[in-house]
Image 1 (cartoon, rainbow, N blue to C red):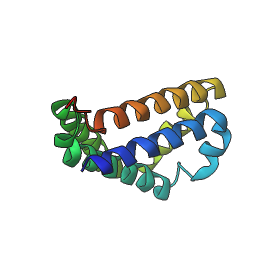
Image 2 (spheres, helix red, strand yellow):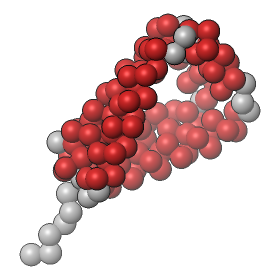
Image 3 (tube, rainbow, N blue to C red):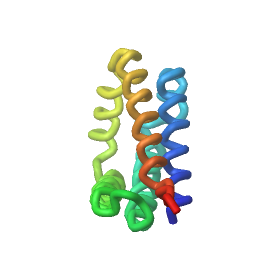
Amino acid sequence: MSTLVTVLGGAVILMGVFLALSPEQWISLVDWESRTGQFVAAAMRVGSGLILFVGASATRYPKGFRLVGVLVLLVGLAIPFVPLDSWSALIRWGTSWPLAVYRVGGAGATLLGAFIIYAAWPERSDD
């Protein structure tokens, strides 16, 4: 299971680097305001939450990963129930921020991905 969590960490790093280097293309990658964009956002969270929850026992911080996994999963399950007009307004608000905010967020996501990999990496034995 730690392999799945490590892969998730790698995906978070790639998304963070992509967001930091090219925020305009991240925004235009999917029509985030549409029902499809809403489901893509939900699916990303449900998948990530499940991986974190199921793989938590194989990490250095199982309780923390389990908790974060449940929270991310619940958010992902709730997103499809947000009315589309409210969802669209939220996306328009989020995409109106300066690009520097996205770049900082991308750097943060890259660091988060690195932490996930560190936490999922097997501890070295000093035999």
